[in-house]
Length: 117
Image (cartoon, rainbow, N blue to C red; front, side, top):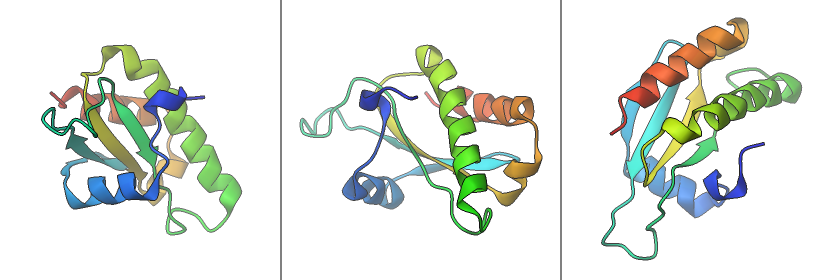
């Protein structure tokens, strides 16, 4: 499980990222990144935070959607020590993410997050 301080759970936090983001696109997912402004003392976090959005377009069964979320959380958990500080991101998989292997998904996430600075 991803540590609580690294999770985005509140709807208004998701909305802020949707409004102000940079989009990174990979083969199996896209990541919306919002850099936290250090001048906004309320929003200033010193660690990366992630939210996961898996719509019904990915798969109609919740079991499959939850599986891909679990895989993505595990990938992010492994990458946390290597990530830069002070950003928030939403990870949104494409439907073809369900048909790929865990390693391919991990490579795609790693490649996308390596561009975040």
